[in-house]
Length: 116
Image (tube, rainbow, N blue to C red; front, side, top):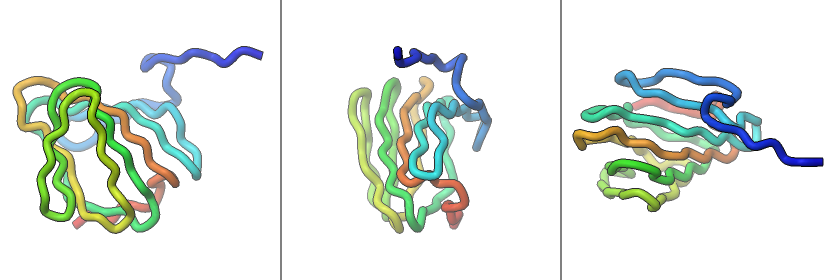
């Protein structure tokens, strides 16, 4: 049995979020969510937290500013960061180029996002 290779065009769903940001779901189970997301220049998301989910952001392209519990961290390509349940956070793209990243959430963040 071979393992199928997939690409962004073959994801299980595509969505828009925030300020004209884009996302692609590759895995979406109760236990795990794996997404690729794209943020155009000068965009950010709303401050929020998750009660159960741990998240890992891994930067593919561009530079991300992740604010976690009021502390800013700048991530470049091939860098990642873990956000634990209960940590208030948001990601922003303050650059003039697109930001692309992989977002792992375990368990899934379905019904586990509290906006502030």
